[in-house]
Image 1 (cartoon, rainbow, N blue to C red):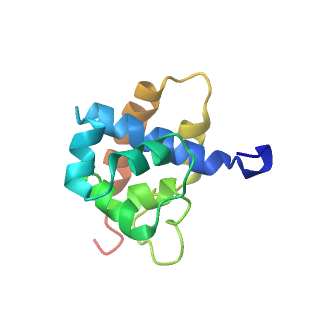
Image 2 (image 1 turned 30 degrees about the vertical axis):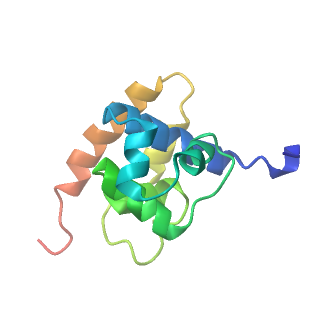
Image 3 (image 1 turned 30 degrees about the horizontal axis):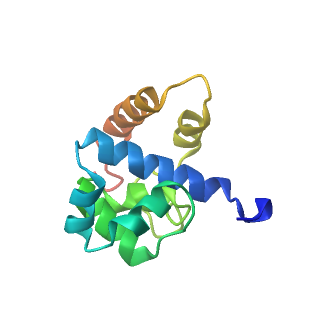
Length: 125
């Protein structure tokens, strides 16, 4: 892979997927069974070598029991005009994800806490 092909967003997405899979105590082979995607391809996604398609991202989100919006935001595909949930892909989440002083586990814990606050607020309520 040429250095100019090394996209940090793709690598970040892969790291996020790997962390979520590990937190779910799911093997790569188990996730492959749930997503109907080969474990070799999932491994390449987790290592940041491939940007998965929308269909694969949705299958991964389902397998990991996380909102597809969250995974799409991690992939840079969410937080467009169609996302009505406050907080997804927000500057706060970006700051948490990019803070080098936090471990991946600490980042995830903070993201869950933050989302628990903002997801409880419905714009129509």
